[in-house]
Length: 322
View 1 (cartoon, rainbow, N blue to C red):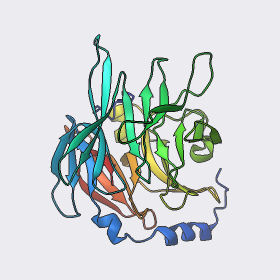
View 2 (cartoon, one colour; view 1 turned 135 degrees about the vertical axis):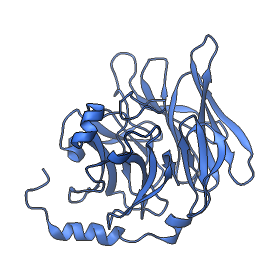
View 3 (cartoon, rainbow, N blue to C red; view 1 turned 90 degrees about the horizontal axis):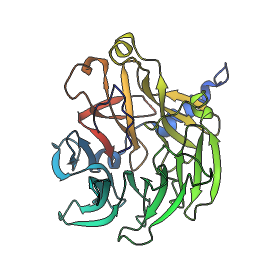
């Protein structure tokens, strides 16, 4: 999959005077965890290509499939995920599958002659979006219907120098009618016919130019499109930088009406694979703390309440989805 080989992962101006009241507003909107966010099923994967499901908070994880990058559908039981293999001639191939986590039935959606990254359900369940490494040797944004029909390319770099070199995953706008993705400079929004709706400099989020990587995520709140969670590189602790000789990655939220940012993870924690809960009261992510650096498998699944900043460790794993 599109995981830049970085040492920390060996598995697949805001104004000088920040308005205090704006932070209070963000906290008030997001404080508290709803029963739905706490009780809905949670998917995640672990090294070795195993997908797990926690049916309800407090229950142990259940192994439900062999694959990668699971995403739970809006119905709460249809899981889309990937497997990898070889195409004719020995080139890499990816397959997109849907599994009913209640009945165990599995069906094939698409076999791609090339690599696929991060399949993602639309909010209404009508499409699955993903990035695919195509014949032009670049990542392009695509969609397909759950029955395998309607496969089409939405955006990406084309021969002749047209279009962006995408690196960010496919992320649905809350209304399900458009998609976000990014390169190293801009966050793009496209409709389902491939028309560009808007582009936003990533510097608005990160404060830095040309600094985004393929592990960064920019994900709008499922209800409030003006509130976005994102990750970006930050200085690590002395222990982290000594171990990996590279920056760390932290989780933030930003109110796009005011550009007020709030960091949610501490200095000693890596955060990646961010995913809003269904109701938007929590952000799930994977990562680890400095204390876990020397472990054979350091990654954990966490949740964070953006209003209170409370972080809860759930279990070992990566790539959470609710």
